Image (cartoon, rainbow, N blue to C red; front, side, top):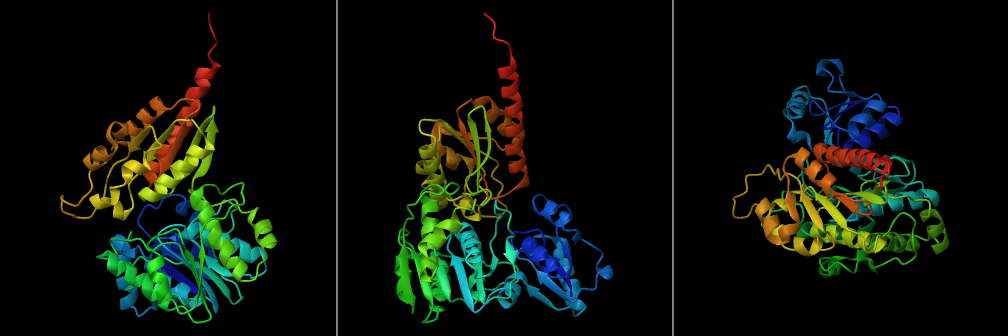
Length: 444
């Protein structure tokens, strides 16, 4: 089959394109004129044609990614395919129809989804379940983020956002038998007008669990407990997983591992088998990932955006590197951070950091000034430790001048090419700087 994917450069659509091609389909895709790493590199290596002329492809099916509305060309292409009566379906609905199986495991919540789903996919694969699966990240082990199999098991990262062609929360499109619920915090403010509306989506999801299903829920998140009463199946809580892991550390990863352990043991996987298979899982890229060590200076890259997750990551680093100075580059990109009310706890979150370098605030919505976050709000909360540097070169130079051997630098960002590029340049130039310093002869 010839399949064309609109908004192909995405956490769901790029892995889907690779899986479809590996299954023998002819795959093409459209996106903005310039797509960026890592998706551009992944698609190029797979020899998947991007932005071909429409009259040259004649697809049998068009899959529409969530971000297609962001670009004029993909919006125009969907109109073209509609006019030419070519069948189309959202990426969400395609996975619901083709990847989700009889024994469907969904992982939902406002944090931890990617790591938990990836671990479950890894453990179940190693345990012989041969599941179909999808998670929205890149595993350091380099196993694919999306895979179709012939078994009746599936594991899916299930998002509550509403975008693209979707008219309800993504997770409400997927059949569910087993549900892991980490939280129900209101983070997708572009999808829900109120906290109660957000909560209602999670209630609908829980009510869809069958009597012979299972709800595995986070006992440490206060937003979850009130929802449990809506379940008509067995409910099992999880808190912390205490055995040490060489790649997954910190309170939040102990919590993620507890979710996986609880579900797997309830599926009949022995504790010993779980532990044995878990040891070989190296984690997810950009989840407190140690990317470089230069002259006893540690560089970490992390996806965290919410005050709670930032705090947990910094406390983890504080425990890993006791007594060391922690510097932070923070890119506030998550949509919920554009609201003043979302950063009320930011001072407490950044307490372990000596300095915070805040990148450019570039939210595109037209929120009134009374509710829209500005750099002055960050300054109000963080005081002298905040350095607001909207120009990348200024941020890079100040960070470089502040870094010393023995320091920790952590980069918090949920995406964005310029910020990632700046972070890589800092590492590159710091390496050069320290090489020059330590190669200078000592004179008396």
